Image (cartoon, rainbow, N blue to C red; front, side, top):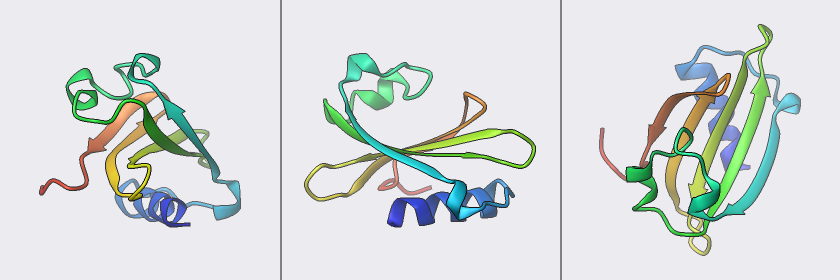
Length: 102
């Protein structure tokens, strides 16, 4: 699955976390903006995303006990990635609009 492959590659390459694929959890959910905490997606980012949005999450707990969560907002019909967010132990580690340069 594309999202899990991206999750593992990003954790290993950018965050230097060795990942055991079989221990990655995955879930997809549809959420309305009012259900999403601004610590997950800042309001100014949410304003340009669809409402409701399809949010696919991956979770991994590394050997040191750190909880890594990545979320991908996906356009429902085209499956285009609209937004990605990373959390480490509940704190935002990174976010990006994949279609933007930089």
